[in-house]
Length: 237
Image (cartoon, rainbow, N blue to C red; front, top):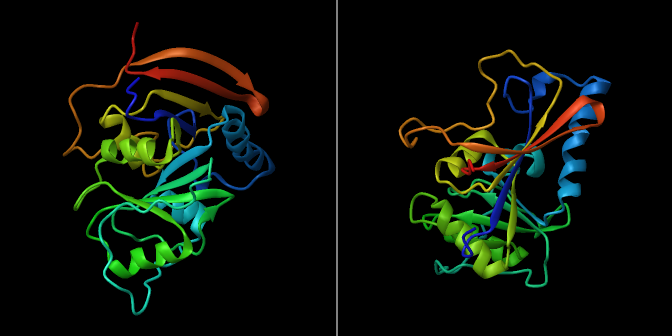
């Protein structure tokens, strides 16, 4: 374990054919029960900091709220802004282009941290400061995930982090060797479509050679015929 980085656990629900939860799976009573499994396991694992990509955050949490730009703002230096010093739980978004709209400093009771690039507008940063949302910079034009994780550890004391999608963010973490454990909740569901995202998706232009090896740690059948499968990532002995 790298002491400069948080220990990262990826928690995801998938179908038996490796697809991640989608709206097209329907809203039957059984599907609603299966959806509820995720939060139960999230709470059981008990890690107070969770991170998702911009698409997942706006779809599942912010309701596609538009970015707020403060009028009459002053110039804002590109220094990390740490609010919520007393917080012990964190909701973290990777939002390099500042497309998320924030209205308060918490999400479901967790202090919000957004990970940005230096090219975002001063007016956006000024609004975040006004409402007490923390932000860190992790690159000039593109997000460097390792830089982001180092800052989360150093500035906020985050030792463990739950990675919860979507597919491209999961793939980026995997490609950079930044996932320590995978907790896959395998649902008794078959998707069968081509377009639904898989658990990990990596741009072919950036994909590193070879597959990532996993070490099976545990398989447990839980309620509603779900399998909770735990792997160590990148460790084969």
